[in-house]
Length: 243
Image 1 (cartoon, rainbow, N blue to C red):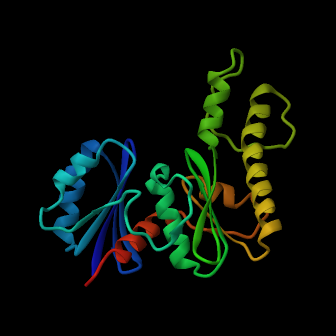
Image 2 (tube, rainbow, N blue to C red):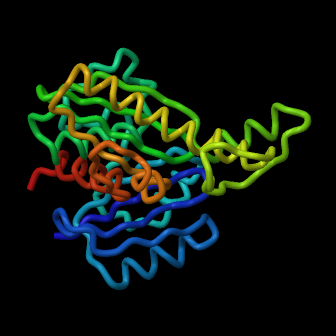
Image 3 (cartoon, helix red, strand yellow):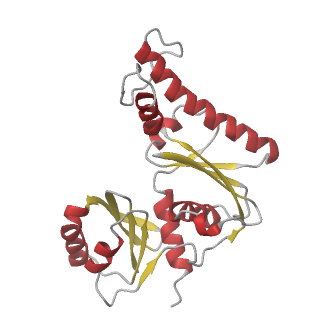
């Protein structure tokens, strides 16, 4: 049984095929290539159900490309999820964060889990051993930190990401690279340490676009899984499927 998983951002869309819990295929496309991508997928796969998670403006365009007889779950803050939501303002909880917590709930049952999603923003999501999502934190990601230095200062240059060669920078650019990159690494490690002081049996999952880079620099023992959000969307779809 195959499921179509669609994760739509502001400019890029991930179109993914799951067969039960196995990710079979993934395609990243833009609005211009949506029709071609979906046509290709529907030629080669037969889907029983689909889920759409959208944080951008492509929702209607994507829905128009899906077969009318394909059962579609449009993820929102009212969708049934496999965890107890103790977030104080559930209507403001992003669908990406809902998917991450759903993955933690289904893959690490009866465990305290901290999910760190390192992308444009860095989000921290905590779900306890009683399957209760309590919340977490939101912080600027690497790209946003570089952009802020270039935008809100007059003399600092606009730089792209570069891994710092030394802790101590000896010119302006190397100081910025050290500050941005090491600052984020130390921030993540500090937050992990604070959680571990309260929850000694903490399971830590790192995901998002910067997973591979950051996982090599974090001292804590973590599960690095770039597909964790997609697996969470699949878990939500299965949780809402009654066959």
